[in-house]
Length: 316
Image 1 (cartoon, rainbow, N blue to C red):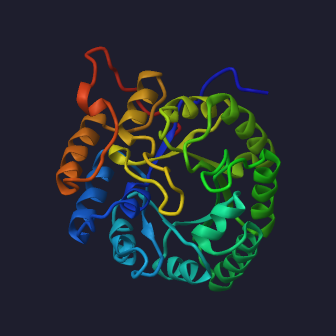
Image 2 (cartoon, rainbow, N blue to C red):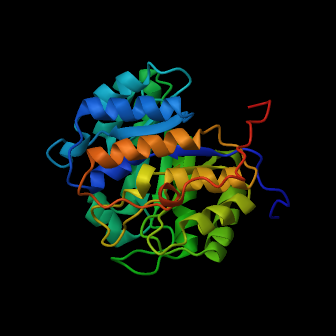
């Protein structure tokens, strides 16, 4: 049953420092990344994905992830996440004491082989190993299994919803603490999102954690709204709408953090974010990434005079 009321509060997890930077040529200096994290935190963001534990030769843009985790952990009430593609990455995340490690699993067999050189079920088996390593270390780092290409793939084409849900359940069975769904290539429409997310929430309950949408075809915010309708209240977003996937042709343009914060706030959904501060940060980041393609619309038009941000509920 779709809730009749939208959530009073939503969380935006900033993923620009990983999903955004991995998709562009510029290698942002560590000092600038620290400035980005500090400014995002000052703007009210309390969940930030700071990088990924992958070999530096593959993604030099993310080679300083351990240092960024250490810095981010010094900021009060900041929940720090990283992406890990395999057991070695998970071991690094555990050693760094990240709060959450996100394991990407592609429901598209073709994309899974291109991105991770493993089949989807082999990724599930790797998650079981990660869970065993986490538990053996006595670590508190949570494991999130992120099912990508949930609505189709530029390499494979159709991805059946039943396969997406099967893999999501397999991740939970393998020991993932949380699961999420991603429209990696921007194929989804709101009707598809509503149907699949409603089934996913029915299966995973409170362990369904996040929606990740790309605005490749202009439907990113509409798809967020469809997920809100079934009770999902946490979303990934990238400042300035940067991001994509190196192994998924055409997977450009994540939902813009500042545009999403504005939409939610204008609908009366509290995020705790200072949108003016986000726009100021966007301007700084745009200067650091001169020559790169940025996205979003709020930065052009500005906040309307009628906009009144919603305070966080007292229980938050």
